[in-house]
Image 1 (cartoon, rainbow, N blue to C red):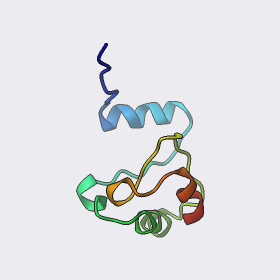
Image 2: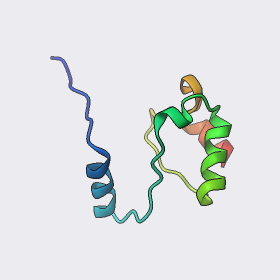
Image 3: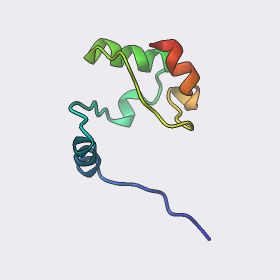
Length: 77
């Protein structure tokens, strides 16, 4: 069977986050961050909102060409 990607709108995603008790979210257009290195991406969040903690799934990727993974995220914070 072919699986369908689970894609929901930003308003729906934010609504679900709110139902889980998440009070703040940062939404950035992909075009604004797509060429950032993993370190630049995390630095932009630290500088913008004072990010100190992050939660992600085991297969989370970030930074240019998906160069960052959960272990690298912990090194950036």
